[in-house]
Amino acid sequence: MNAGCFCLGGIGCLSDEKEVGADWQAQLEAWAAPFLEALAHPAQRSWAPIYLAGLLGPGERKSVQPMAERVAPEDHWQLHHFVCTSPWPTAPLETVLARKANALLGGRASHLIVDDTALVKQGKRSVGVTRQYCGELGKAANCQALVSLTLARGEVPAPVALRLYLPEDWAADPARREKCAVPEEIGFRPKWRIALSELDRLLAAGVKFGDVLADTAYGEAAEFRAGLKARRLRYGVGLLAIQKVYPAAVKLLEPEPPTGKGRPRKHPRPSCPSVSAEAMIASLGEGAWKRLCWRKGTKGELAAEFCAVRVRVAEGALLAKGERLPGEQAEWLVAERRAGGEVRYYLSNLPETATLLRLARQIKARWSCEQAHEQMKRELGLDHFEGRSWNGLHHHALLTMIAFCFLQHLRLGGEKRGSSAARRPSPACRRSGAS
Image: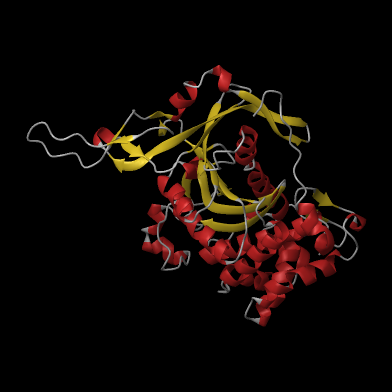
């Protein structure tokens, strides 16, 4: 690798070794040692650091051939074989990554952020490519979708899972599966189920965090929220405006006895009807809204209006006409009104004693995963991979996450200062009248 220039996540491309110390290459060698030990074959242990060097080094394009020209000009096909066709399993290295990220950022003040990121593709032969929503473009496009889990503390994120979402048409197409070497055990799974599976893997690896954050694409799935509750995890997730909720004080009344020959009711009756999340917030009135600054950004305070109310989500047993009974536990329905008047809704199971500022900080902490996705694409070439296979894509994605985690290790000062630096609280402020 060119010793004079490499990228640092969240800071940009550095051209002066003095900014990180002249021994950064030695730091990389020592830091990456546990990853290399997890690879079974000597050739794999030889090519992994070279591929990492290609990702970390200068150059606008981080696909295999341009990287090989810079770091292994005589061995393009060996580098290609290592990432695209070599059958090395990702699981051992993923466990090392999870533990590295946890040592750097884990703890009760950390968040585990669930999201997905799209890799835009021109062709249709790469594994999982189909026309689907692409957040980067803000519209439907030809792309791959990766379910992402990111461990974050304050303003420092570290992606720890990237798993391809395999659309139903791909999962049911034997010919395309064979061409892209999709493992037999991989079938169609909704994104929320992939996220829960990766969450279990991280928990098994010992990753510690205070709560799980996710946008509406995951929060609208009652099964996803139920999975988090079953794991006794705190969460803050996006919610659809049309989601039905009940007041927290709703009571369940015993079913009335039948008056004629009809069948007796099986379920109790709620003491009041459910309403949409939008209607519940509107019923609070303008006085419920408080302007809050949840942190200070590079261009000043980041602020919006928030309000919150305790509710029970209509996610219990199904009643007549599509209505559902209230869920067992009361939770926070949070609304955010932005400067342009747009209102977004969230659900949080933080304790009843949580302040509005705490709720606002929780739901706005999601932004760091989007920053990480952007940096991995812009600086490390996450979306530059040109191979078509299942293993190749996941090998590249994993090595990109490893490179990013190393850069965050350097950003926080290496072994000596990483732990304390990661734990510095992010600046935030409270407007007058906030609670």
